[in-house]
Length: 208
Image (cartoon, rainbow, N blue to C red; front, side, top):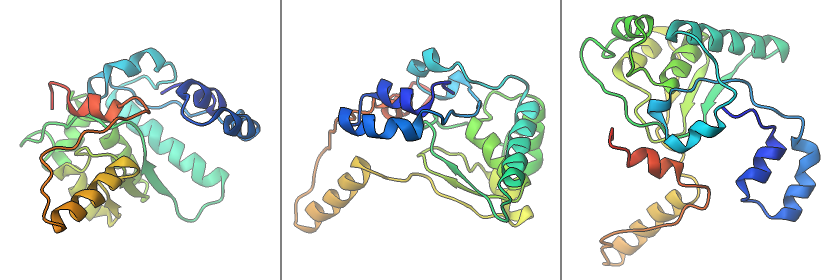
C-alpha cells in the first residue's frame, strides 16, 4: 500500500545494517509495489500515513482488479503455475456468522454488497481461487472463513497457512517446548519487535 520503491522502503524501515543497505540498493531501487487493497479498519492505524498506493472501488471491482493482475502476471511471465503468497500486515479477525460468510454464496453476496467484514486478504484469497492459483496465508488472521474454504473445495484449489511463525515467533515456540519439557512452565513471554510491532497493534486492537 506504499508507493516507495524497495530501496527507499528499506531505508525508511532502518532495520538492515547501513553497509548492507548500500550493497542492496542497486538491486532494489527499480522494484516498486503494485497498488493494493487498503481497508483501514483491518490494520493498525499507524499504516494510514504511508497508504498512498491503493486501489479504489467496490469490493467486486477490487476483486476483479486482483484477478486481472494475476492473469496478467501469469501471461507476461509465461507461467504454467502460480502460487499467491500473503505476506502483508496481520489483519484483525473478521466476524464469522451465518448470512455473511459461512458459504461461498453468502461470501459472494457479501462482496457484492460491500460488507465491511470482508477483509482484504479474503478478496485476495477469492481472486486466487477463482484463477485456480494456490493461496498461502502467512499471517495469524482468519482469512479462511467457511465461505473461502467452501469455494476452494468447489474449485479444487489448495489453500493453507495461518502464520509463518518466522523469527521471534518460532524462537518463542521452540523455547517454550524446551522449557516445558525441562519441567519449567513459563508464566509469560515478553519480546521486543524492532520492525514496529504492527502485528501486535492489530492483534491488541479493540476489535480483537
